Length: 260
Length: 355
Image (cartoon, one colour):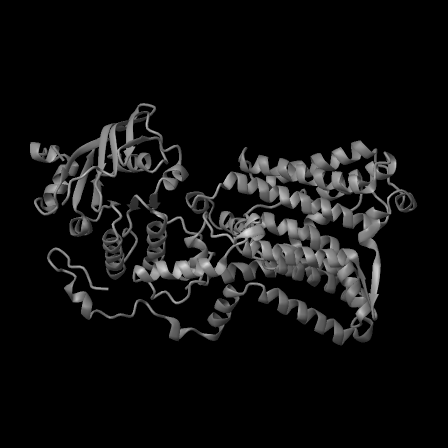
């Protein structure tokens, strides 16, 4: 793997909620064209870390850099404007709206001229682009782009959510438990989809509890424990049981792992 | 797409696995097919009820009901509920409810009348002030719902009383007579004027109502704002995470609803001729009735303004049909009550259909 400058970094991030320390001088690094898995036991603070990196939580202290430039992510919209897209566990799709409407929800394509001032939608363009995006990601098993999202299976919905994020994310794609609610076959499709997105050059952060999935597709694994990054391991050199042992504190990481 | 390889290739057996993923499509019964059809086209039920109602009264009462004059009279009678119903639909689509629509409508009409007739301000300016006041009332509701985060039912229950009381305090419960309005500001009565097409009689309020319904049908389906109305009612968190500024959006929906209610106030002057602070007080319940019978879901995110128009017409047809038939007016209320419950039951049933 090429180790050039990281796309997204966090340094000494801290966050307290009253007496609870959710982030305790945590670091974070994401390199170009990689899939970085973030694992950690429940309550380890992974979600606080991810929320800080996507603008949903403001760290009390520490520094976030995007492409080497210090940035503050004031809210999720600010992160999105900078090209950091997140697929939330609860998907953030509107069930009654169509696939095309959902793909462009919040950033619709408007018609030109006077019609644009009234925020009239360019529906043909939205349909066309949505179809193209789903096609590139091999998702066109979906019958119609005008179908309501609630008529799709869990895997297809996840596919739409990932496709949407991949279409708009220019820097980073964050996936929060993308396979948690899916069956074996649907999970497989989503994993293939994630690999497809990496092929197109977008680095991916994958938060997951599913060790086989993490070890299968991740290039590096960020192990989070007690509010900070414990170590970063290479899935080709470490076994799943070692990773679980690190995550739960059963073993301490070697200095080589600590170096990340 | 080529299947990726798992670590120990433990999913190798998958290639031979059945490709049927819980496919029930072949085993759909006729009832289920109806359910799915209605899920895709929720306005179908009210349309059928409306046609059924017209057919039944056409058969029972015959000519006295089924003629152009009577049928267009129904349109005239539902014009105000139809206009306010558009406002109510917008609010209900966001999973809210607005009990203050009637109060806003009357307050706006009173402002138009007082400004134009009592204060002698030019009618177009008085009209504008009435519409502006309606919008402001809507913004008050919107701010309380979206920024203060109070439940819409409570907010609008409160503002209903506030707007109504303000109206009585301001007017001291005085009615402006129709002759005075006609003399000082005939523009305010414009929507009540009629025109004939053969035996059919229309008021400009009917035209305005149909125009408003079509306009908002277009806005809701073909503009970003319209899609966001559905999105915030469907799943507020999802809408927020999709980057919709939900607070701003909600306030704008209540503001637009207030503006439409102000417009309804103008139509109300046309209907009554006079301007009375005690008129139109049932518009809130009537508009909710039209919305619900029209198939819009009280849980938000589903429904249409066309449905609301149909819902208002259903109530109008039953009211007119039963009256001509000569029944006790209470039968109308009884029928409408039963229709409301049936409509919500149908909505619950339709919502269960998915995939």
